[in-house]
Image (cartoon, rainbow, N blue to C red):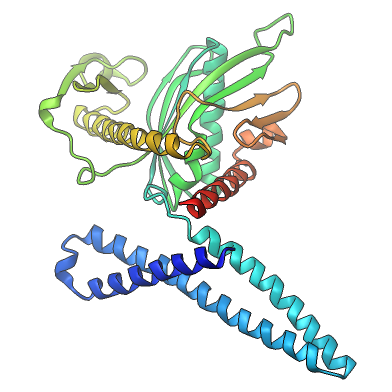
Length: 362
């Protein structure tokens, strides 16, 4: 770690911490509960960094003392003890420096937000829809493994058991931080059950991961919306056939449209559609900002381009390849059962390394 880089960052963090601590005792600074909560969370993050910095300085002092003792001590036993102590301290310092480096990377404010996850069939016809169903189950199982909570907001099925489109609401701690790397094109290579000749088909599915945005965080002008009401299709009983409950909301300036029909009540479908639309519009704004930033830096792992091919699931070779980090993982069935952490952890680790290099250059 560069001493100048470290010292400059710690000085800035100490200054921010002191100011935030002073502001928190002034109620007028934080009129809204949400702002107060965010400020408190930021204070805790800064305190953790400063605590690690103090601990690092303490270990540095102890290491210097141990090294001096090893040089001066004549007795073999005490000399060896001092050398062993110095070795242990060096390992602790190295580990703590790595933790501090990553802690100094500016956090994405969306990382702690809940998620709206959208999966859609792209190229490949029925086989693509079948794979949408596989990914839908994978993400549901992953949320269960992580202790998150999910709810289906929308689901459009086809006769052979596939899913053309599915939208999930996922809530939990640091959900967006874990799932944001899933955004992009997922490619599957396998022999469909309906393929008699045993020929391998290639199909694609798109995944969008949107940070859930509250009404106060992103306002939509009602004048910009066109709302259409229609009869839902598919299962749902007499209510579907007799009452127009399905909602389609179109944002006129962008042309973005959202339809919801899963609920039996029009008001609930409208509420869900607005929730999805708000997150999509916010995501579009965020993508514009990130695109400008990526053009400036050109080295961050892709997490925002829906057209980017991020991963290939090769069933005949039992191999999943993530193209962003050029790493392959085996045991497809286990991963599709929700065991995604092995991939996500590697993506987070690599992304942090690249971001750290960018922070050092700035």
